[in-house]
Image 1 (cartoon, rainbow, N blue to C red):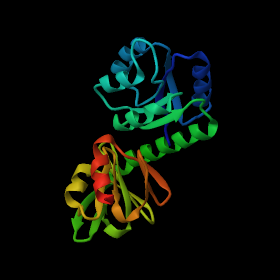
Image 2 (image 1 turned 30 degrees about the vertical axis):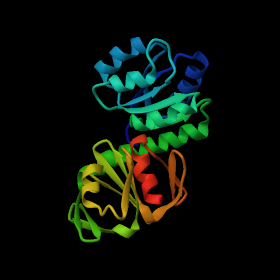
Image 3 (image 1 turned 180 degrees about the vertical axis):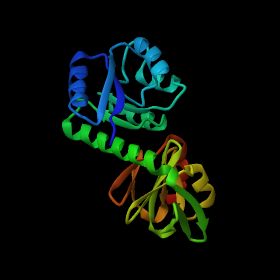
Length: 235
């Protein structure tokens, strides 16, 4: 990241707050604007200031982090930090940016920060890309250069707010086209939507679990509303 990303922390546990604050303040790519222990105090600030990145606990009194996130009228990068793994699926369905289990480790925090790095880079470059479809390939235009992506090289597609990341066997591409647009154009015999934020190439699926699929050792979540279609595919 060339500039620091502004963020806030919402955490009602003092020890967890201290640890997360330490990680954030020690990272020059992040700029901590404010910390909150009470969701009701935080929500007014969030709506008014609209911080682009929020680290937030889920299980809090009066209002849960999930309820607060769903109530917002803008779309920040929300990273849930919680002690309860059962919230993971709901957070993915709510389109949270990431989900970290407590206690937060330096390794896991850095993994999340790497995703934030990637998103910031995507956002800065996305306006350079446009997508069109031609037979069994996608044409991605970057200025005067056109990248040709063969459909059989695609592993999966990931929706990132108004952008779509196309992950192939060789590299990642970004386009302003939304995932819904891709799914209208991609052949359904070859691709399947598994989540609000993900679609995968059927031929690249290695393993299907209860709540996730594995594509070349990459684990992707499966949304509740897409499980039935996925089961029908393997039956």
